[in-house]
Length: 270
Image (cartoon, rainbow, N blue to C red; front, top):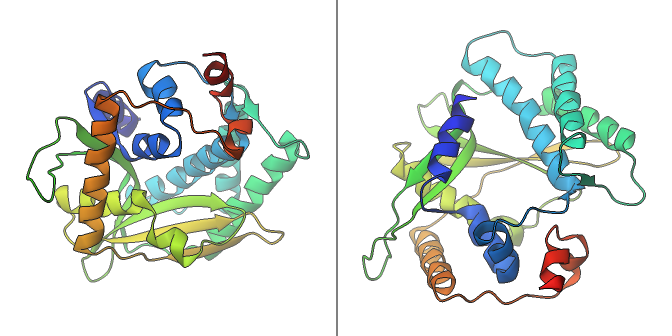
């Protein structure tokens, strides 16, 4: 709760976020409706609600380890997921599932997934923080210009390896394995590598814990690396998106994702 309160305070100030940047890159009109006009979404996509519930369950797990409590059992993780999932379903914003899915089927899938996590996830040497918010200053790599808005975000968990090195854990759910390109060009991970150094974690490693919604649930670990050039490209991207936003470039990008976009109705009406 303290982390959520701290993040709320950060969001009350002028800021940029990795998710906001990704939204603008996906569709500038979607960014405008969501972040500037504050138009309420008509729904939450099923995978987003599902992923949020999984994150809450894993936060329960890592928070217990952080406080040196007994490791939560598989049943405890399953109960945490079910509680979070049902809260998503009773939210004022409805969750939109695929036509062939039922709420019970998704719940059972989530239970199987967090139980697989309990069986397969490597145990960290030490948990430093869970859902750790950050706020950092960004400077353009070529001009030195400092962005007026700070970059904010949340690390799912920060742990420390036996050799003393810090590691940022990022939890993801997906229906298929990530490709090398998917991993290499993920701007969120690049932004997090910058934020880790800026928040005193030094040359922290990043581990993506990908929970796969397969017939037999699986966990895959990815350890992406980022170079100085990668980080410079990310900073140029942030400044470019910021300039486009300041210029009012909010065109609609029509593609297949419009079918499930929570702002499709207001977008088409406007």
